[in-house]
Image 1 (cartoon, one colour):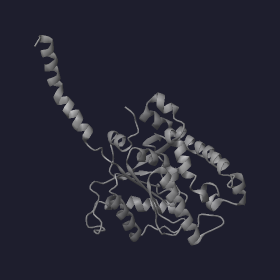
Image 2 (cartoon, helix red, strand yellow):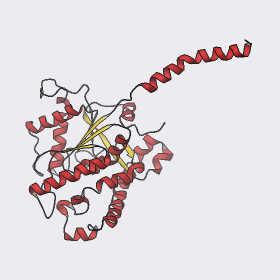
Image 3 (cartoon, helix red, strand yellow):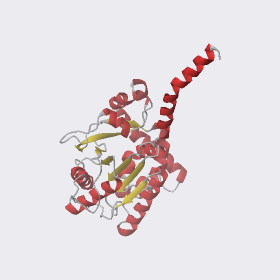
Image 4 (cartoon, helix red, strand yellow):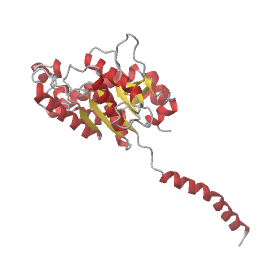
Length: 304
């Protein structure tokens, strides 16, 4: 055997441990993230993080959207049981289009209270899901349901890890990271975008999911009227969806512009400045406080 062949064999043997290590790493199952988001009504979570929900689902992670109320007064023309059933079905269809799970609790719209019983319900849901990430409203909001939902989730942040609190449901193995949806309220302090995510790549899919929430996006919900049906072309499936797309391009576009600095931080100047539509979130002061490295793990959307 000549010297050249011997060198090749020797080099191959040196590389063998590395190849085995890479093969073992590839064979290891990736960590599946578990995300749960609590909106006050059957549209809030879909509106606030529908794009990110789709992105997580596409990567094989598990997402659950929970409405703390059944939305039974959230319409200008109908209410009660029929509306609750309708909005539950809409939320379920939107979740199906996103590739996530949904749950609507049977609490009357406009009547969320931060009671012990409700806090225990929230704690059980977070525990059952074994959540890594929990989202909700900030407890500073125009709508009492938003405020009280935020208080319930925030007050459950510590209790989800206490073994003998709701002992019928095993505690979380590790305290989740709790995060807030964005808003424009400034007292006692304004929303701060700790992370902003481009949803340009899934924007059309988000619009398609929101299209399922007909009672809200086309009929106007509690603030709608017969005029709303005309303005939003509610009876024309094609035209109304184009109007919906334009509306949300504006809404998520304004979030991108408002939190451009955060987008640049996470994506770099070139990509961050080019983002057209985005969703943004603030880390809650309760729960686990993640490092930047952990946030990149929890939001695995940044290409290296």
